[in-house]
Amino acid sequence: MAKTLQMVFRDVSGKEVTLSLLDPKEDLTLTQVQAVMADIVSRNIFANKNGDFVQVADARILSRDTVSLA
Image (tube, rainbow, N blue to C red):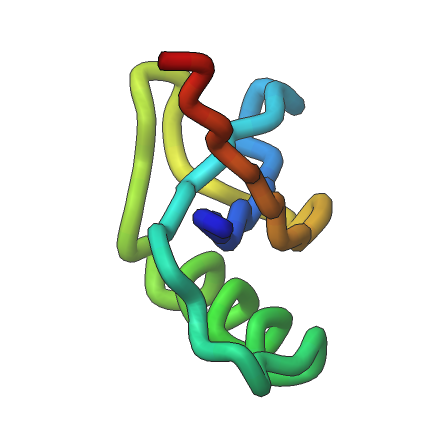
């Protein structure tokens, strides 16, 4: 099963921007992710075409199963 950590931010225009990371640690906690996301916002590490990230919006882990039909 493939897993992806999605960190969702809001930029200065209020639009959501998602950063995705493959294969997050199994024991990753919401507190850890929120701390990293807050650090990204406070240091202005990333920006997009609409400007800087200004707010943490959401964090989630997606799980996908792939089943070959062949």
